[in-house]
Image (cartoon, rainbow, N blue to C red; front, top):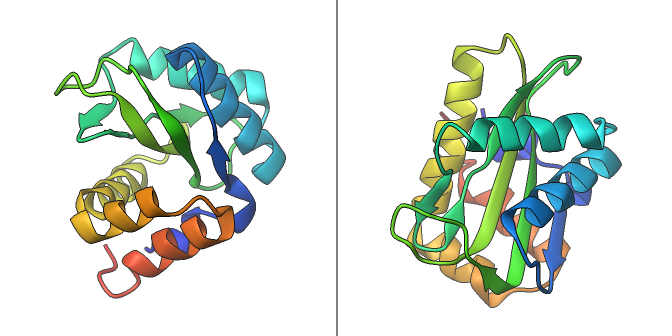
Length: 154
């Protein structure tokens, strides 16, 4: 598994400023809807439901919100780079500017965990993170993410 299978170019966006985590989830849901045809409201509800179990802000300005959804045939990802970091209730209390959202079929089990682990490893790579923060072009961000882990497939 590699990120190029999870993330299409149309699922990457740069956003100037968002005022809340709820608004971020709306943006992620709308992005998943436009990129993959997911129902935006269902995607947003799934993210909020998962977040209610505990924050998905993993620290160092990175959040990995994710949800399992009905009527989804495969795992898909969306990525948002925020130009102005957002308070996210992360484990280290730092605001978030890099957000990789994952949506998986309800019964995906271990595949969902593998995808989450792959995204997590990629987003822990300091070289990848610094390149993501240095770019504001969606196509370039997609290239950075999908080239990052082709060598280290899960």
